[in-house]
Length: 86
Image (cartoon, rainbow, N blue to C red):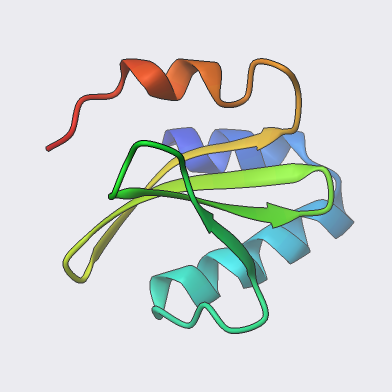
């Protein structure tokens, strides 16, 4: 089981369905109707807000890698500062 599946299993059924739909949109490069924001000081990191959940991903050319799915807290974005640019 990979990291994303593990996180999804911890969510409620309603949250899981919302996140799966959002992940599908991200995977298809369809960012319409998403609360998308580029993260400060990084050209390749973005976040999508879905209620109290945050999906953080890296976009390089046409490649997308999901880095985290977390409930919003004061620590949500702190661990991202450790990520190196590719």
